[in-house]
Figure 1: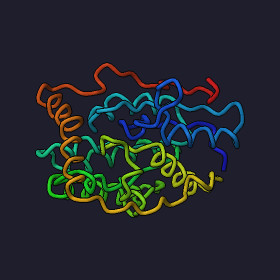
Figure 2: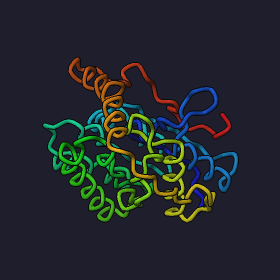
Figure 3: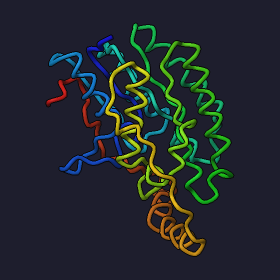
Amino acid sequence: MAWRSFVAMGDSFTEGMCDEYPDGTYRGWADLVAARLAVDSGPDFGYANLAIRGRLLDQVIAEQLEPTLAMRPDLVSFAAGGNDVLRPRVDPHTLVERIDPVIARIRATGADVIMFRFADVAVHIPGGQRMIGARAAILNDGFESIARRHGAYLIDLFADHAYLHRNMWSDDRLHLSETGHRRVAGHVLNALGVGVEEEWMLVPPAPQTTPWRLALSSDLRWAREHLAPWVGRHLLGRSSGDLVRAKRPVLAPMEE
C-alpha cells in the first residue's frame, strides 16, 4: 500500500544522530524511509519528524503525541525509552505501561505504527550488560508485546547480529553510524513491503579482535570524550536536546 503521510516520534535514534547531511544536519533512518515512501505516494506525500535528542519517554509523550494525532498521519513510528533505561533508578516495567496507551491511541485513528526492539547497545559499552542490559531487555520485550497486542509493525534490531559490529555505531557508542541508520531503514522498508536499496542490507565483515591494550585505550578515550560529558549533563539536570527543536515539526513534502 502507499502511505500518504508519515510522522516519526522519539529521541536521537529517530532524529538521525549521527548520520549527517552535507550541511551538518542529521538525516537518519526515518528520513531515508520517508524519501522511499514518497516515491510511491508522489508529491502529495507528507513527512514530519518530531524526534529530539535526549528526550525521555514522558517528554516524548507530552510533547509529541498530541501534535502527531492532530496531523492524522497514515503511518507513525514510535521509538522512545532508550534514554530512560540509561538511568539506574528507572523502572522499565513502568515505561512499558506508559507506552501501551500511547500506541492504542495512535492505532485508534487508523494509522499504522512502527515499533522497535532496540539493538544491543550495551555490548559496546564497558560494563554495559551489567548496568543497563536487564532494563533494556524488559523494554524490548514490552515493545514486542505491545506491537503484537495492537497490530503494529515490529522491527527487531536486537535480533540482527550485524549491530554487534562496531562500524554500525558512531564513536560515542550510543548512536548509530551512517551504515547503521541505513540498515534500520532497510529493515523498516522490508517490513512495510516496500523496495529497499540492496546495499543497505549488506552485512559488514566481522571486525578483527582488538588487542586488549588498544581496546583499553579506546575505552578510556570513550569515557573521557563521551561518558564524562553525559554524566556531567545528567548531574546538572541538563540534556543535549535542551536547545534543539524538531527538525520537521509539520507534515511537508520531502523536497522541502
